[in-house]
Amino acid sequence: MIRLTDVEMEYENGTDAIRGITLNIADGEFVFLVGPSGSGKSTIINLLTGELIPSAGRIMVNGFAVSTISGKQLPLMRRTLGVIFQDFRLIEKKTVYDNLSFVMRAVGASPKEIRKRIPYVLELVGLKDKALCHPTELSGGEQQRVAIARALVNNPTTIIADEPTGNLDPDRSLELMRLLIRINELGATVVIVTHEKELVNRFEKRVVTIDGGKIISDQIGGYVGGTIHG
Image (tube, rainbow, N blue to C red; front, side):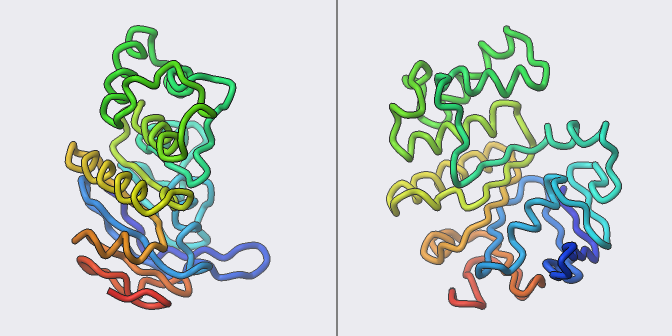
């Protein structure tokens, strides 16, 4: 469960990035978070992951009070999240398998757990034959699938994807979105930040539109406001 209640975020330079947002995302939901550049989407992602603390209001993420979270609890909260970035952020000198095992070892997984989990996740994202490849040997779409596998490998309850299709062509973007929908159908909550009108409008999913730091629409299907309309 993700719950933002009367959340405000003012940066030190005086910019009001978020202005009194209240938003609930239930376990197992699939939500697009959309809006024009500078609308506050990235700020919300940083608030959900604990990178930022709100100026006012309350944020709950998977049972953790992020707005008042302690340094000891923050890593525990982040283990419930799998975050996918636009720029992949893979370690080029490590194989696909080692990129994933690195993330699992970081949270204390045993060698047995690593050997069991990685093949399963790679098969899920369609990369079961790429375990020994390095990122530079893969296409952009394949690298993004590795990034998704990395987000999944510690079995988080929530996936947050920040412009995950930004570096992909339309066909690969559609393929990636279908994969994220499949992951959602397996039980994970999925929140996707994007500005891609055509992609959002191909799926009848919940769309939360943000502009000027406020929610201007929350509906099933269709990106409204700014330059994009359903």
